[in-house]
Image 1 (cartoon, one colour):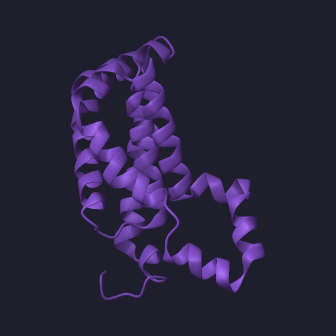
Image 2 (cartoon, one colour):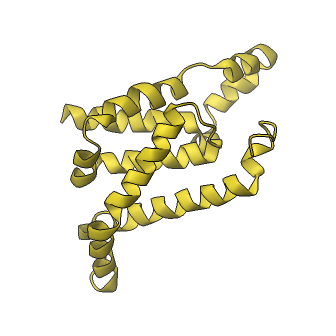
Length: 164
């Protein structure tokens, strides 16, 4: 995967598989991470099982991926987006928030903030096509999948949690 150029990497099978794993784990977490929000019956039972047996293990795995991201490992933009969405949701669940503990500050300072910063790709786009740079900043569809937007949402959610 490292041998591919930057534009081909996100389309590689490895990154597509990883994207789907992150997408599925986020969907499970979002739907079943708080069993009190599940419908009665088997959905609530599954939510309780997920929350007691799986949720914190998945959180640990996602924290490991965040550590890789912090150390400069390549992640496709969509994988980065899904990773931050997962962590944003984790901030809202007390057991997850407590599990990550003091590492939240590290994630904020060493992963989210550097990702949100104006970078070389932003500078290139600004030089070559300032209108496209501005359009990209205000495109709602672009924001749904943007790693920068997901990192900003994570920072917002985390800072809001710390304040309360």
